[in-house]
Length: 112
Length: 114
Image 1 (tube, rainbow over the protein chains, first blue to last red):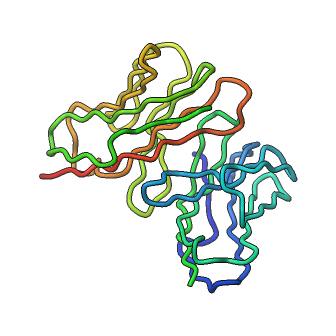
Image 2 (tube, helix red, strand yellow):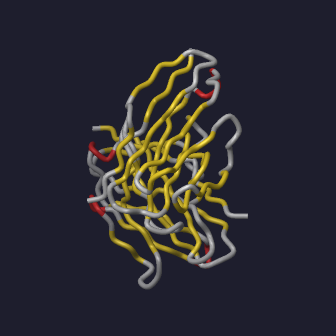
């Protein structure tokens, strides 16, 4: 079975802090994704990566950056956290872009 | 532009009753279609997917979905709902070629009453 793990289930940070969310997949998938999920808005794509060191902006990239130095690891970075970034963050991976995406358990981030 | 509409934000059904969750999509190319389920506080789990072939797709946990190209729909069904089916359900669409990601609907929350 594909396994996607996220570094934290719950995280509390202060406004202005730099925040790292990490995601690791064990299936040698080419593609990895970061979404945020908010009530009534569904899943919104922040960034995705289709290869090591490659990234593309999704629908809501503002205030976020990403890093993919190794194929199995995809990091989401909040350079200066703000309260409007309080959300559930979901990581996913897939073999190809339109193939089944496998999700991690999510990180619920609260920014105070 | 690609989009997915799940017109029902919240549905309540009695345990043992049948269920249908609606999904309509807008996509210019041949679509790949997915249904995911999310239990509270968890990530998304794939229920079923349609890539090609038979338009009636069977999934896990007794769910099925039917692709109707003429109606641009991919509705999810279950003949008899169990209390453990209470969760949020997401429909998603991707392209057979050319795209690098999926587009998700806003979800339908299912409540099951005893």
